[in-house]
Image (cartoon, chains in turn green, brown):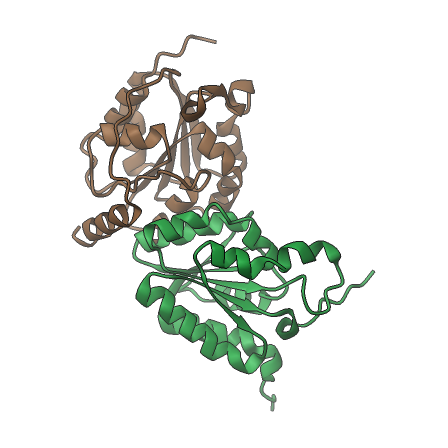
Length: 177
Length: 192
């Protein structure tokens, strides 16, 4: 008999369950280690169109188009990707497109790569300046509640919500030669 | 190269004749004015910003509405800024999405500076390399009827690169309030 996956590693399942609950039908992403389990769930779900992007900025347009067409959409990105979206985020705020962005953080707790730090350290401020409500998640047991609340605010109120999944939650990236 | 004679206003008007339930996403600047000049319609999602994002809005809409046809009508500058989105669309292969580039090889809004297409960069070749089902250049108003048919029935994703004259046309300004444009579009879509 298999033992259940511990919550420390199964938190992406909670995000996916919230996506199902609120009826998210399109998910845009750039491949990412922190989001890999969630991306895999979305790819396996015939009710969700998974859209792999060349840059996170494309995902903002995708969300707007999905919403125009009556579908809810979410974006998955690393903190560095937030910087790639800044001007395009105007589209969401200007037209009131509800959107949930799940951001895996780099450039904080235990980061080995200093090149990640400049963007990682301003990610939350940038999102706020772009009109997002931001919520940080530090521990696996808070994922479900935070993502659920964020999704409801985004789609009930046509608001832009970002949930920052801390590097402490995801785990330090282990650098191997 | 032959002198270009295709007028953008005439071409866009011809494309949108008897448009039925075609969903239209015009890119910022002249493309939005051209689509407005062809006749205001609630199924136009006019853009006044978000440069580089027009094709991706078309993709999200095409995936959400697989039984309707989506036409992105935009300029070469907007398409060049979102070149990667052609690869993203090529991966997803939406059969109901068409992109029309109104290519004057210029940045019209900022003073007619030459764009990359003026220096030989070929958007049709890019689209074909990105696995678009169909892509070609048009340069005559005689081609408009065929392109119109492609918008309504062609197997997508497809891209038409329309070589248009680089004249400054009078601005025709549609709705500019993003919320209003969105809500009007959504209401019209819900009623068809």
